[in-house]
Image 1 (cartoon, one colour):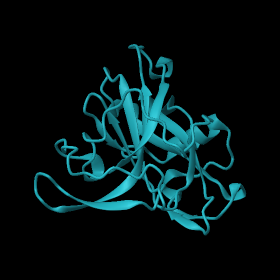
Image 2: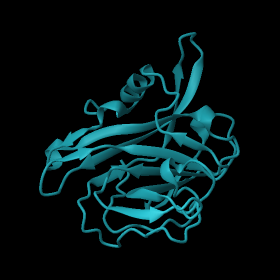
Image 3: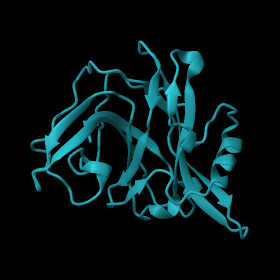
Image 4: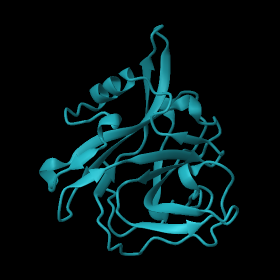
Amino acid sequence: MNKSRIGVPILAGVGLGAAIFAGPGGLGPPLPALGFPEPAIVSRAWQFQFSHDVPRAIAVPDQGGQNVWYWYMPYKIVNHTDTERIFIPDITIATDRGDIIPAGRGVPSHVFAAIKTRIGNSLLERPDQMVDRVLRGEDHARESVVVWPASALDESTSLLSIFISGLSGETAIAKNPVTGESIALRRTLMLDFQMPGRPVRPQDQPVVFAGERWVMR
């Protein structure tokens, strides 16, 4: 598993930009960055330790026996805070082509079983089972995957960003610069991945980790 861990944020060399997907759920038109708070450089709020691998492609037969491609990214969280915490993940995938994909949408339940077999990790939990308490210490680490259909991505995608909320207790309130309404924002990890080239099959697509940073989203 990639040893990239949350601690001191690594600024992405390239990225979609926090302003583009700073709105609630990442949906709707881009919101200007002005007026949105920046996350603390060193947050005083609780925070899970997080590690991840790069996204990989897998073909899983559907009910008719036809292979359907999916992308998945294994990840692990560890609670090193002073007490047990509840993990409520909110994960969205976004691309430089304007694709916005909520993790898990359009993914049949049997796809996870295929991914778990591929990875060979008996501790891997279903994404929908991750909403639960996390006990303290490495022995109580939780592991799962982010999954989305390959068909949800534009074929010319060259940059992929994964936004993960629920890893930190840091929050903020901001005004929507368009409507003036108050917006609740959460400290969110943004992972960037480059996808160079145009291979015919998803399994041949190179994926390169391009950095990470915290945003309020």
